[in-house]
Length: 470
Image 1: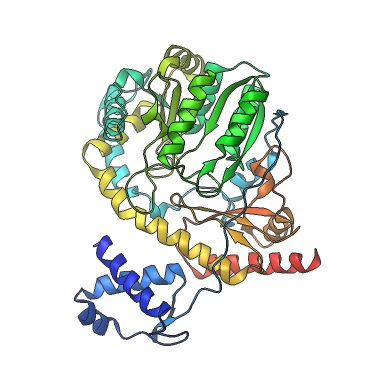
Image 2: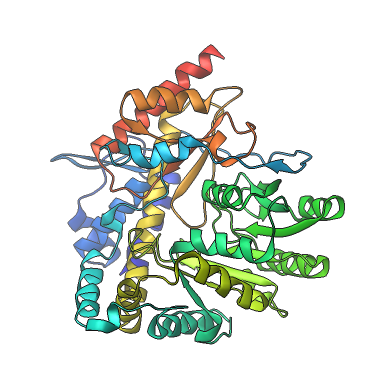
């Protein structure tokens, strides 16, 4: 069904672009289109919703769907070129404030967390009840993780081309803990670590916790970290680790092509520098096949693979995993010292969900929803934000990186939006310096509503006013 309604949407979009249906015109009724395309009425309605998300249709109550062309095709942000040097990391208090703010019923456009409507809530409730009935099995220590959970993760990794055993896997409290454990396993305080720029604030916080210095390497909005910039950093500085999100990086949404992933793995192996791979968005691709992790190209155990189910099953379960490769002994030691083990109950619940096939069924249904939600948000930005705004075109995940024109202050947009109970993530959170002052990150994983639409329009109005002042 998902493939069919996308096909109908694509055909209608082509007719709109060719001028068969013009701006402001009402589309034929759903029954007429159902007969025209030889599909069900529900499929036509899903196609309409898809085109509405893309910005090509507007639903009018009791009137039907009308052609509403996107305001403009916005360019992608430009990859910033800068000569990097090691910098101390200081986790910004703003990050903690944003997380707290989204608990205060503000419009949640800041944190990269999907709305519960995108999550398999009922299925996880059932799996958790099943796990709770396991008695002591769900209440004991589980170091380095419940075997049922690690076995299911090993099976999923094998399907991606990464051959590991349950003994190669450590259960963690989300991907954030996995990254911290990986850093502790291969670095010492004061060491230099390479990251992408802009970089996910959680990675910068992990570096801060471990007491490391960072070199930021520019990230291309489509192809990911600049390998040329990485090579230069490796030549100039005694780098001890490199943290990369090859699949749908946050905040850019970039997906590194396989050949560049292979180059990345080989380059770091030759330099003797561990690669810490964060693949938390790998399962949330929008189209095509699931992108392969960089770990696929690892032949020596130099890649420490980290991921979690926080962006798909539940952020609140705090359940992830890591495959430390040849650093397994060090990572196991760090995990034991940190907290003895990850909670058993969520491990058993998620293992049950995976084993019963519920996770794959859920992913097949939610991927087009993430894509449509992100496209809808991008289209709304195009209608509301000032001329000269650039917006990323993510190939997965659900966040957008917005680059405002000129010296328009994203930080000031953030401040003024907070006064109207709208929460956004300002660009300065994504770097150890202030080079992204004119940027914002928006979370697109929310059910579309008048409240969300109004919030984006207000952000655009604020940005437009600031652009005229700068």
